[in-house]
Structure formats: structure tokens, C-alpha cells
Image 1 (tube, rainbow, N blue to C red):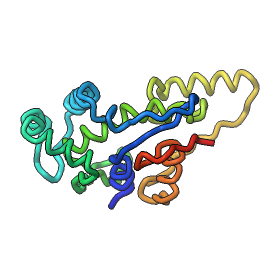
Image 2 (cartoon, rainbow, N blue to C red; image 1 turned 60 degrees about the vertical axis):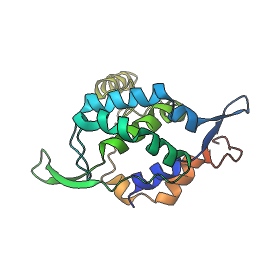
Image 3 (tube, rainbow, N blue to C red; image 1 turned 45 degrees about the vertical axis):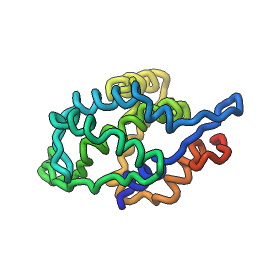
Image 4 (cartoon, one colour; image 1 turned 30 degrees about the horizontal axis):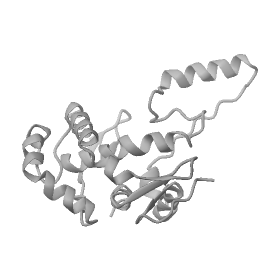
Length: 194
């Protein structure tokens, strides 16, 4: 099971987070709310993309969800939902090499997007202000502007890090452990992040 499937499976359980008021709120209901799922569907539909191992396309997604939504939601609530394997393809990189890409099914992409929409605001607060990669409302251009500001302030060195194949090599248990410092399963009391 890939790290994304493992993390995804762990997060598809009864989730709660503990905020500053030391009160817990159920995240699974928020993730599975009609409004959140509709927004997730719209995002996946707008992104288009190829079908996964099941062959369901984004154009077929709406009808598929109409026919299977209750079964999918029941499996998620009962902790019996298993994401499908990803379809493996190779795409060319600018340097002529090939990049491995895993394509989840469109249904799994909707569920993943629904999770992201709820969890991103929680984790976003924990990121460094100096981090610009793959962050909402941040761009490469913003990072360059910040670097120019720092250079004008007298800094001479810029360090650019790109962890090649990070999710292929990251210790999955440690990653899930870090996630679970903020989000905990099973309705157990949550721990706040240090």
C-alpha cells in the first residue's frame, strides 16, 4: 500500500481535532457533509484528469456517485472503505527522463479532495511562513518576491530544497505519527500539536 493510500485510509476513520478551546469536533461528519462533498466533486470535475484502475471517467462520475453514494458513505462511516489501487503510468519530464505517476480513481479523488478541504486549514497553521511549495494562496512568484526582499535586507545565501521521490521514501509510520499529533482516530481524545 502506498503512503498516500495508507494515510488516506487512516484518515477515513472517525476523526477529531482539539483546538485552542480544548473542545473536540467531529471531522468525519464535516468531511462527509453534502456541501463539502459537492465542492470536492466540482473540484475533481474541473481538474478533469484520466480515469483510474476502474475506468470511470470524470464525465461518468456524477452518474456513478448518484448510483453508489450511499454505499460509499456507509463504508466510510463503518471504516470499511478501501481506496482502489492507483493506476501507474509514466510521463515525460522536461529533462527527457520519465516520471512515475499514480492515478487514483475519480471516486477516490473526490474523497481525497473532501479530506483536503477540511484538513488543510487545520494543518496550514502549522507550516513555516517561509514555505511556499504546494500551499494555498502561495506561488513561486511570491517566493521569489520574498527572496528579493531578503537579499535587499543583506542576506547572501538562498537554499532551494526539492526532496526527490519524497513520498516514495518517507517513513510512513513517522508521517502518520506526525499527522496523528493533530488528528486522532477512533473518537479518542485528541492531542494538540507541540
